[in-house]
Length: 135
Image (cartoon, rainbow, N blue to C red; front, side, top):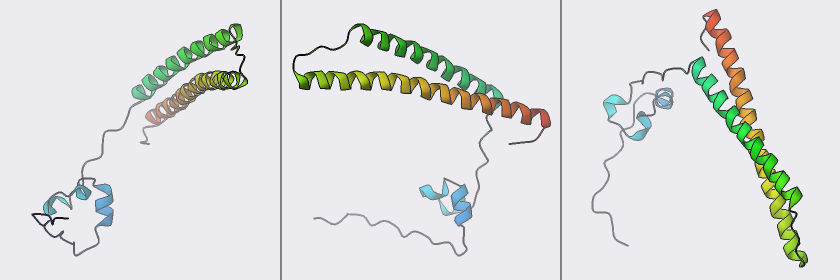
């Protein structure tokens, strides 16, 4: 095994404890210059009620589409059940059918649950905006 051609420079160790500054500043942990290690980046802008509402509506629309897909999958499998003469093939087909139906309803539930959560956050953000208190 060959040795590396260039050695890495030693990492400077600060004299004081700056773990709280480093935890708040992601640039400090990425190896930025020592002069920038003590600076704190401004906080990101807060999300407004409109972004929560648009996310809730998008997720509700996807839940509605998944519900339609789930209904069609159930209708298809109830009209066309798998029929195989080999027991192993019948077992695999039934398991696959159960997996497909379960995944379609899981997607429906997941999108609906996210839509409900975002709707509640939207309502909460409207109440906080009316009071003038930040989150």
